Image (cartoon, rainbow, N blue to C red; front, side, top):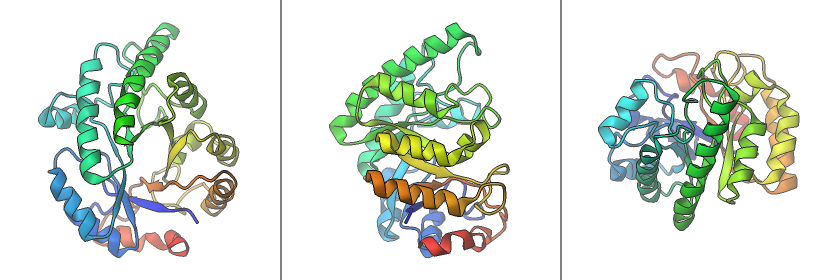
Length: 280
């Protein structure tokens, strides 16, 4: 059956971040992901993982900045990554090196390299420059990550949630990964974004999962980014499809639950996990 990881940046919003590890474990999760670890000491996060029997399966590179303080500031001021942005290569490398340090401490096998907003709009020339910058940065990151046994992921994001984001479609992301030419660079297939931009989730899963270039799934209901069962997607069918295709191609990754609980009050995340019970 699919293996699900709690996204601690979005789930359990009624609790302080460090308390969310225990809450996720009590709800039956065996793994977690979140956006950023950099505001916390790596040994503190590692202790929370060990103390609750949890596996860290994913986190993001900084969205910008050159140190811990500016990492936070970059996100808060709207930066959504640097990997595709010409002129910010130094930021990307510093951020990725910091991510590798945390990945080692947390025994995390995957790092999501945040692609970023296209610097000069949507013109063909701007798109080509952004692609070239992204490919170059990922080739460098792949080599660094390979030394540590890590995968590097890129994620297509819908233009409604993040206007101007450079990667929006699965085919674009897969072209980038193929151009990079490194086996440890893969696509983070977020089905929330995919449904909004492309739809046809069953066919997309069947098309891309057997390629070996999908490193991780994420889910959230469409249109409101709540838990499965609150919107338009037939998740029972989607999870059965992932199961079937995984069995055929040998995929054994995780599905991150990157959603905002519909009930954000105390205990609301746990009460909204009825959809998960048959998969635990």
